Length: 356
Ligand code: 13P
Ligand code: SF4
Image 1: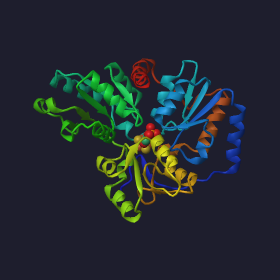
Image 2: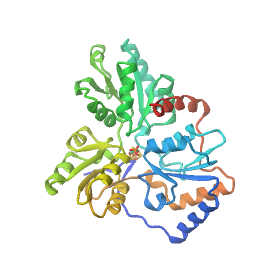
Image 3: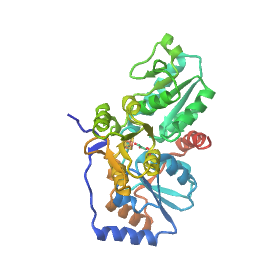
Image 4: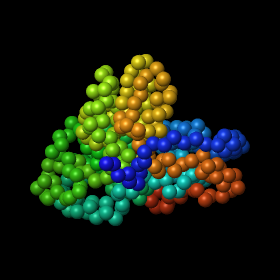
């Protein structure tokens, strides 16, 4: 039986009071010259309808970097809003409607543990190790990676970042998602024997053959998709194509037809001909949105019922309205401020990614 943990919940439909929705629409219009709302694909529809820009982590960080508005409201999770704060100017402010909307995966890598591990790894090998952190990590981890000459990556560009990191060094330390790291390594043709899961340390002899060291983190939503789900859908829907997020396990990714970011999932489904059948392994708000958007295609969740990211789901229309009201009053209760020193180094790791 599945034991739900922080980060995942069974999907539940939500409906908001029309008065509340029209209050948000009215206030958004009033604040239009100063405020922009960004929304990630996993947000509820009732929140996402107010976003000026929707996208995956890469698109949203690129857009945040070029924003001209004074106030940026980020409907997503904490690390995304932190990235927006890192990439925007000093006179711009970033807000998240719920400061507790974290990411279970990002919480799995803390800087003191990563620093201690780094020291051990460097003492074990003379080769150049390039740290790469998935964008789903704290600003502090991004700063660590930036200080060491490494990169941030997202699920959209992990392959390109791997290529660049392998030009600069001979080993990659990939944080914090073991699955995205392993799936990208497989995409690059790196044999399984050259990956090392850091649930324990290699010895110096083993270290010689390793090309990718994987931090033992994972997404507590995507880990619930199983190989049996893929097999069941293939059995029940001949001709189905399966696409999953790169945070799914290697066995699920290998049994699927495609894997990638939330944008890649949307692109594959939208570009497929009418009558196509899709099985999708990602957060359920996105799956349901695709289902509604393409009534001429069959869109199915890879798992019966679907899973929602409980932290993404903390952003509600009520909290969005409160945030806008607070901004109107000149408050900053929901503002995110990354420490300037952390910002400096984290920005260097983000910019290395954005410049690729
Ligand atoms: P994307 O960058 O693909 O939108 O993924 C973000 C995320 O948190 C997936 O769980
Ligand atoms: Fe984090 Fe997973 Fe939620 Fe994405 S779906 S924000 S990785 S917990």
